[in-house]
Length: 329
Image (cartoon, rainbow, N blue to C red; front, top):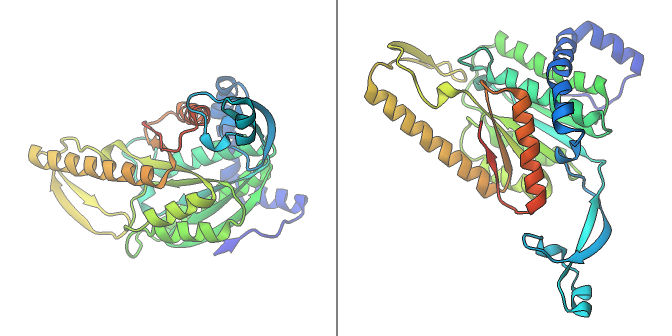
């Protein structure tokens, strides 16, 4: 497992990035021109909806209103005035965000122009850049066959390049070793996340959630200490098969391959039914864990997806409910 815990001099970092992270630099520049510039107008600078701080300062008192969090009721003032009053807080914006990145072989799949891995890199690059340029720190845990890299939280554009370069290197490793033994163990990644994040943070779990069972409990434990957002990657072909005749299907993680007859309407219906059941189970598990969920399709426009995410966060903050809100692609 590799970690960048020591900070090299800025000049050394610049030279190394120029030599090693040319692809990451090009990718980040493309995101800055095609996505972040558009988001600046759409979000109107409202980056506050993307991440909430850990510190709270008492700003005011006001009468209780419907949908207010009852935990914020000031009982002394309520008793004195005989009318329920709640405390109003301002948030400390300085906090860390972590990206828990599932980059196992299943995220290489994509039926269109982009694979799930590219959608993941785009989302992480945009969010990391938006957050770091406002002084927030971002870090990452990179998982392939196992936890392969830990990037501690820092700020600045150069640090975002470190993060994207780590994702790029993982993609190169995946191409060199086209199969892996067994399925993804997302529970191991989430347990590592709980151990390696000592302070309360905002945690983005970016995964397709195609994993061995048992990840729900570690996710719930992570929620007890951190604010967790599940960023679920998927491809439309994983939900419904078109009529393509006899085609080979290969498990990207185990290498197992079989031929299926997609011309058979009964097979396509069974596939769609099982996929729908898997979707329902996944959403129920995320809801039970109490996390917000953003669903990202390989056919998504990244700008629209980020705006959906910001709107979801704004509504979540406004009404203050504790349940999950899944934003469909």
